[in-house]
Image (cartoon, rainbow, N blue to C red):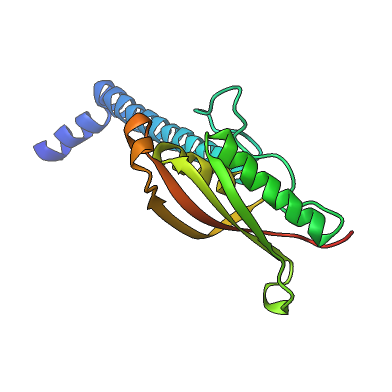
Length: 188
């Protein structure tokens, strides 16, 4: 045997080399196990976040940052309630008038439009003329569109009032022509 073969055999049978190889392999194995476990934990967190978002979007659970007393999902029927189209129209008029007066506005006139054509069958429309301050107009529009029943703003015309004396004494009100529609399912 030559010297290089003897030195190779002594290295491969040395307990120090075997122990260091064993420790090195164990460190590599532990690193792989820890990295795989961290990937699994990360994937579970992603799945939990996706499930929470899905529940929130489906309306099963309120938002985490919503106020405790405030309902995150509006309650009630999505359709205008009423045994007849006239009663459903009155419900629509009451809902819009209530929203305008709740935010400090004045309803000047209303007009109900019940379509007789099949193109808009089931939809009841109304036009309201009212006066309201600019700051409250956005709140009225949000209240109408976000609440129940589902209402749609079809027309919005805003003009400043022409009364100069009222403009000096109080915040300036706007004259608003508001077209709103909602769907009625019909008699049950």
